[in-house]
Image 1 (cartoon, rainbow, N blue to C red):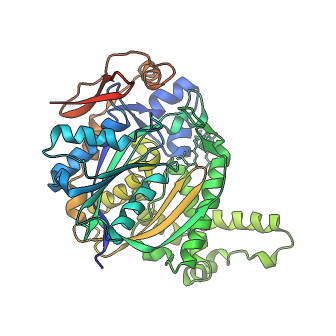
Image 2 (cartoon, protein in one colour):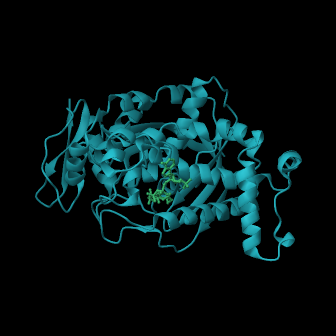
Amino acid sequence: MAEVGIDGMEIRTGKLQLDLAETFAPAQGDDPEKYTKGLGLFTSSFPDVYEDIVTMAANASRRLLDRKDISLEDIGRIDVATESAFDKSKPVSTYVAGCLEQVFEGDLHHANKGERKFACVAGTQALDDAYNWIRAGRNRGRKALVIATDTALYARDDAGEATQGAGAVAMVVDENPDLVTFSDQQGFGSADETDFLKPNQQFPSVDGKRSMQVYLARMREAMEDFERNGGDTHPDNFALIPFHTPFPGMVRRAAALGFRHCIRGNEVEEEVAEEIGRQPRQEEFDSHEAYLDAQKEYTETLTETDQYTDWYKQTIEPTLAISRYVGNWYTGSVHIARAAGMQEALDEGRDLTGKQLLIGSYGSGAQAEIHAETIQSGWEDEISQLNIDEQMEQRRDISFAEYERIHDAHNHDENREMDPLTTPDNEFVFDGWGRMGERKYTYVE
Ligand code: CAA
């Protein structure tokens, strides 16, 4: 059976940029280093007034289909993953299809369309659905278009406001793909949690500190499940490990715990033991609390060893390169981490063909998923065609007053009118409301 995976991807960022250290921190009365050092974020992306989850998704998809010379009839399935949907019935994928039909020949009437929801892990779930559809032989030679798109906005003055972002990732899933193939082994860590949710509201209710603990707990469960399913987790066997990145500081923590878990009992633990001793074992302690304290102390010391810092620099740090400048994109976040890591590897001349990625996805509510991917020989061509760096460069920097207005303009309860801050150029734009309250879109040359 043919291998299945991601054949190509495109990334679209919101066209506005808020500088967290220079603009946001002073207005909030915060030390800029809380953002740059603590959270690991420098700027965030925001949508202009004519941008939303549909325009960003459609603009990314249009470039992807153009670049890969894919016609609408080649697409058998469109799944959009989002936690920013504005309609409880009509899926975002129908709006995206409507946009694509405006600019490409043919139509998408025979493509199965849907919407995937499980907070940020839904993008990975949609890839999974596409993979299963193709592996089941139901695709009739056609490809799946999978899109992760979000405007990750928080209520003003919520602690999460610092981690906002907006953007879309469009991916084509196909047989014999150019970019990566997926492993059959998967691990899940899933539990009924109330750490971050949007019960019929636009902006999330968040228990920020708890959400971080839940992320780590579910990720550990997923790792154990992956190992039980025969998945390899030796840290040296992966060229890159892209994690869901709500902010880089979260990944810094996950990486430390993940490394500790994955070296337990192997030669890396023995090697570092000469310097810092072996990992604490539960049976050596009278209480669970004492064991946890010892583990915490060991982990802190572990992150200072050469073995850890070299591994982190090569495997984790490159995956954060885009996220630091765009913020959280929820469903798209782990997919920009994959792209960032591969882009950095390309710049450094690393040869990734045949190498493995370990992907750690996560969604609040809560579920983590872990699987491996094998990088394909077309990866350099694919990654070199991404234009996300140029898009980030071209974003318009906004003042704090403009930020306040744009936040209100995207707030469904406020819906304030404001003039756009940028000029549309060869792209889909939100163009007002239809008679049944639907959002309307046009392509602007
Ligand atoms: N210099 C250097 N570092 C500083 C600093 C300074 N002057 N001031 C603060 N810091 C550090 C803090 O020590 C902290 O780092 P550590 O956690 O490593 O100690 C970091 O900066 C953040 O500071 P605070 O903890 O004080 O920040 P906060 O309380 O304002 O909020 C947050 C942090 C809870 C993550 C908040 O941003 C939030 O609620 N975010 C939304 C929820 C979220 O992203 N959760 C992540 C897991 S859930 C998930 O992944 C799903 C998803 O996408 C939402």
